View 1 (spheres, helix red, strand yellow):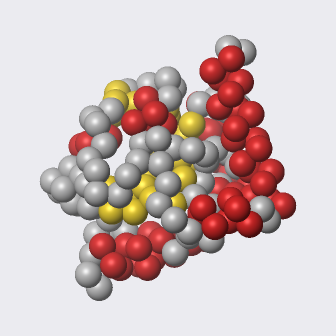
View 2 (spheres, one colour; view 1 turned 90 degrees about the horizontal axis):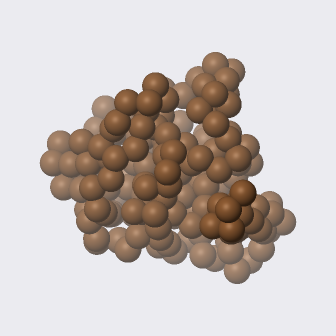
Amino acid sequence: MTSQKFNVWFGTMVFTAAMLTGSTALHAQAQNAVGIPVGSTPPAVEIEDLDGNTVSLDRWSGRRPVLLEFWATWCPVCAKLQPEIDAAHERFGDQVEFVVVGVAVNQTKRSVRRHLERHSLTFTVLWDTKGRATRAFKAPTTSYVVILDADGTVAYTGVGADQDLQGALARMLDE
C-alpha cells in the first residue's frame, strides 16, 4: 500500500471510529459545511460505472439537482445515514438525481456488486477507481454528501449519520 493510500485509509478509520464513539468535535463538524465550499462549482470529473464505462459527474449539470454520497460497503456511518437518504429519495426522487460514489478504499467493484445484490439501492452507483471525484469534491470521509443545484453549484455539504438531507433539499428547491 502506498503512503498516500495508507493516509486515506487511516484517516477514514480514525474518522469512522470517532463518529462511532460520539466525538463532539467531529459531531459539531458534521453540522457545518465541509469539503468543497458551498457556492463553488466542482471541476468536471470522470469516474466509472460498475461495468467500467466512463461517466462524467457533470452530466446532470443544467438539468436537475444531484445528491452525491461518497460511500463504502464497510462504512457503518453510511449504513446509519441510509434511512435518511431513502426518505429523501422517496420525497424528492422525481426532482433530484441520487448518485452513490463508491470510494476505492478497502473495497472492490466486486464487493460493491455483492453488497448491492443483498441491499438494493435505487440510485445510480458509480466507482471512483482513481479517487478523482474524492479529490475534486474534497471528500473528507465516507458518508460525505454533496448536493448540487440544477446549475451544478454546491448547495450543501455534510458528513455523518445525523444529516437533514430532506431539509437541505427542501430549502434548495424552495419548498
